[in-house]
Length: 516
Image (cartoon, rainbow, N blue to C red; front, side):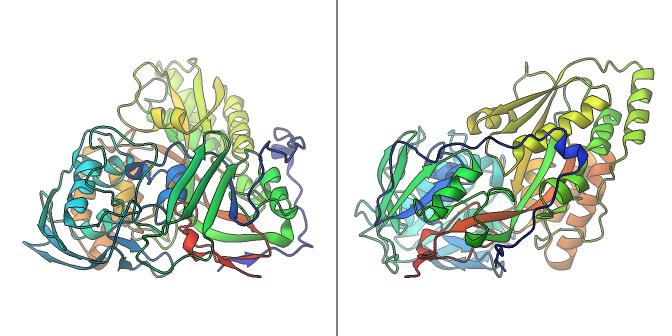
């Protein structure tokens, strides 16, 4: 449950480890050159959305604006109960051994352009996002190389068939946002037309994004008939905008950003980790990767830098997601062991001299810059040549998703993985399979284990997923896990909203109400 921070909360002093490398950010102006409209719900984000393309809404920067606001899926997962609930569909049934699924669709839904939503639009949405050549993020994140056969049986009946049995196909399809049949299937769009409670009003790149209530919306009208987004890189600036009455909502705040009386902390589903690109030396040697994992001071980061707002991670999914292993112990921090592994590798002829890039995304999460600096200091202390690179969303996507660049040199990529579906198979298919869209490693053994788990249900599925999370660190060591994170947002007194584990990925604007 979300909790307001008391104004008297004490500050925790950083340890020498963090203090030596983490200079406090300089104070900066709140001014932006453009103010919010006073009658709108005013939201300040940490970064501008890279686009509003619906098939990329599984990207946090896009989904936080698009999902269930501008566009909607057939069904959506309730973040509180974990249950998959009907949305644009009214229900579904399976046949052919859970290979074919039939969805009944609502007959009272229109897109914001006035056109009627029907099964043909659903077929086009699936073909465009899953079967097309757009390189949609949702395709790699949820479906991989799997294509689906989608058929409009009639206006309100959709039939979807997978190549093989898939007991969670409705959950996968909850990541496909519905768009009109006329939406370009050959190129991505910058803005989208959808069935959600809001529509895009205007977007001045680099300045402001404005939404207005969708007059065609099939559900209850939202409390706010206008929403405006701006973005500021500094968390302290975002918090100050709410404190000064310039904004109603500030997201992605850190423990040192201020405005304690207005902030709300809550558990989200994000896990921070280093993904080690395994193709280039010296990272192609498992001993080097293990040494890096031993060097990460994950407990110190959580306790001192994040001021306890998080939990040391032993796997890539947090508690509450199917497959999470409560008994899995975090990788220890042991610099002596790390140096020993590097010495063994070097004695066997491994060249440790190549410069290793340590890449993070600006604004990825609070204190990302400081986190990167601490890790770089630890790795440099082992004798590795590590160079920090901070980039934007598009820059990290180029390094994060297949096909990986061939001339990149060895690099460590800071990832922040949120399992929005609540099932570990999504994480594994993305990050653990040998050919997973964001996997830099994998083994034949893991591939077979993941395939077996994907076909199972109930306790058998839970057990098999746990076994994968237990096996990967011992056989592949692709990740240096850091923390299951908590999130903080600031809310103005006039706004009421209860954040949940999905807020960082899809902040549903219709759930915001006027408090006064």
